[in-house]
Image (tube, rainbow, N blue to C red; front, side, top):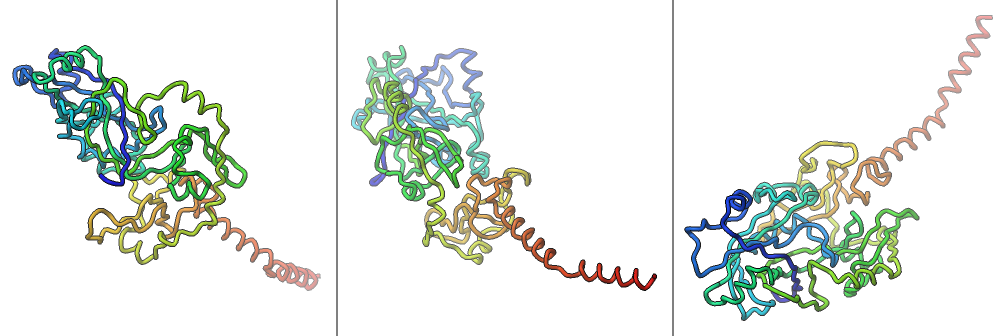
Length: 369
């Protein structure tokens, strides 16, 4: 995993006792063995591994990124305090649930349009075992609640998030953010466009390319700059709140031309239809023609080839609305309507037919007299 950053997330462990109430709560979600099938030298547990949304240290997990990484959770080692040589167990199952703890079908989640998927609230629960016979004292301490789990994962990249607005790292750099400065995360940030505030909130990091690499049982998780913990130190939170607000001028992005992302209409026609792949056709507010990504379906290499991002399938060019909303004055639909209206008004104003008709009416009236 060279070139990727490492992160840890902390959560509580729940040791499973065989009760009827517990069976009903987890039977459909986590694949726990029945009491008669449990091996006596193992301690079985479950925990919330990670949840979508922003944690207290301002790392933001999109449901779409969690779904992409789900295959990297099972069969990973459980260690002590993130010491990879101190393996004391392993993970054997995972399940995605909604905010009420109801299991979600992974195939159905993966088939959803990313825009819709990322509006959901999801949690990832894990099932694991501790080698109780080999580590009896640790197993007993886990059973009595003295330890927590801390997720181990790598991420290859990240975007920036302010309120509901997500900026790519390239856009963030263009707006003046120093991407290497970890202290920026959590700062109150405002994005201004044409003198109007379009987004406000704490600056968060949207993790991309997540690979889960294991899980640790921890008491006092380490916290170097590249590590993110699920719970933040309150004094650090208060300190960041008193710092000066970051102001980002969105208008700077309009002067930037990304040569690498230029695509032709032919490329788009070959890869997608003009219909946007949304599950509804509501033309008020949410734009049905917006495509977050245009994927080359003919590409045979590893991974996926992205032809364009933030694309308007209706007009076959980049979307000009920051909110991807048809009510935005900067939406191409509205821009076109403005141009057409102005053109019609111009021609009507210069049309001499009304004047000629008026002269004709005068002539007819004089003839009648």
